[in-house]
Amino acid sequence: MAGPEIARLVESVSEDELRRWVERLSFLRHGQLNPTALEEAGRIVEERLAELGLRPERQAFGYRGRAFFNVVAELPGREAGLPPFLAGAHYDAAWGSPGADDNASAVAAMLVAAGALAGAALAGHVPRRTIRFAGFSIEEPQDERDRRCRHGSRHFARLAFRGWERYAGVFILESVGYADHTPGSQHVPLNLPLRVPDTGTFLGVVGNRRAKKMMALLDRAAGEYAPDLEVVSHRFPLAGWLVPATRMSDHAPFWDRGYPAAMLTDTAFLRNPNYHRPSDRPETLDYAFMANVTRALTAALAEG
Image 1 (tube, rainbow, N blue to C red):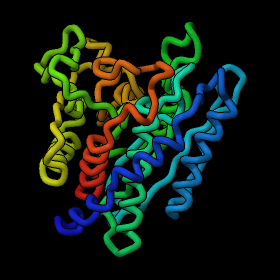
Image 2 (tube, one colour):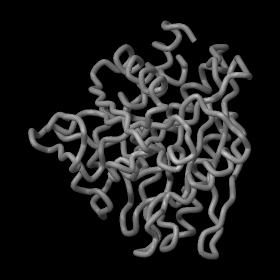
Image 3 (cartoon, rainbow, N blue to C red):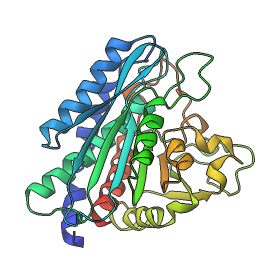
Image 4 (cartoon, rainbow, N blue to C red):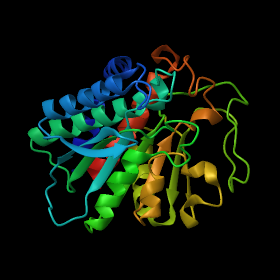
């Protein structure tokens, strides 16, 4: 897709649409405590992808006697032989939290990006690579014994690995709606091998060594099509095990299977005081920041 077409594509990303999706998805939806509500959240994702003509499918799996499902759909690219991109986000929330930032913001960004790309494809501007979209279930810990969590993405990555599926890049959206312009609002985990701003207004991009090309693509796309978005990127060796805080989302199962994968995040609890709390509500988010994240992702997917 050429530059002018991508520019028109990112212009279609609106703060109002992101806000509407965040508001629609912000309700209690924990796998063990609110299973019916969680299923409804999955249906919302499924129905929106179907409205876009992407033919979503449920990828079922079980956990402790209950049935859950990921939602997977794809937008075919022009060159079928190329490894596709994957853009994913978990649609569950922590217990007791409506989960506006974690993770309705990310699901909203994924759905809006999917809508923009599907609309461009209908107009004849088809991306070069096939793009798959995935809504993952039960990323959050289900109880105090659930140390591994990320069950939906682990199931997805395991099936992909066993099926010899390749990916040019796996973009995982994790809490992408919160920004704080107060100096000192950004905290940094111990042993992080890079310096970051002390103001919580940047997008963190956390990848493995194999994610070099996809992260460079995202950096370029952000610079050109979302110039107000500051991006701080870093690649970690050994699947992030030297800095465990880097593994706390759905990219980790893809790292463990050797896929090039990166998490796009506002850094969650390192910035957002509402993390995993009842106060994680739509009115606390920064929709201009979220729109820029969505534009950068959309442009990267279109350009790759």
